[in-house]
Length: 139
Image (tube, rainbow, N blue to C red; front, side):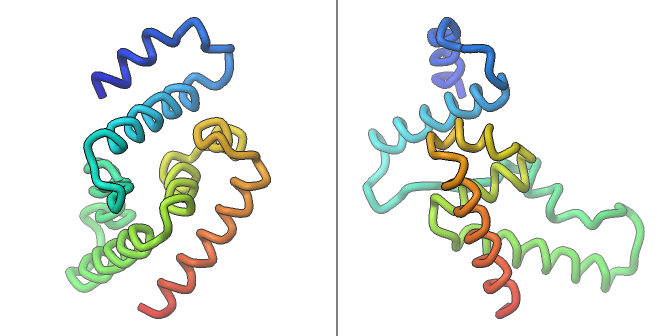
């Protein structure tokens, strides 16, 4: 995070008035890729896609404190199944689904972050959703 902050500070002159959140996420993404290229083997591309706060948000049922122990257990099992299905996706599909569904970014912002055309983002997102649905049906 510190390296990403330094890169953002150094590159602020190149900020062209686009969505600041998308620009910052692109800087963080590119910094992470640079770090992975230097410090990880070629077999490892991603670690955890979800931050701990996001994991906790997914693990909690919609209405905290409400429900029976059985419903809480089912909700936790469903959240774990979704997390496992997302983790099993190929990196390019996992990236767009996380940016769209968890970070709630629009297609244009995702395209800027991933350096891919909007059409590619849309097709990856569609395929990622289909893969997730297939994986979750078989669970």
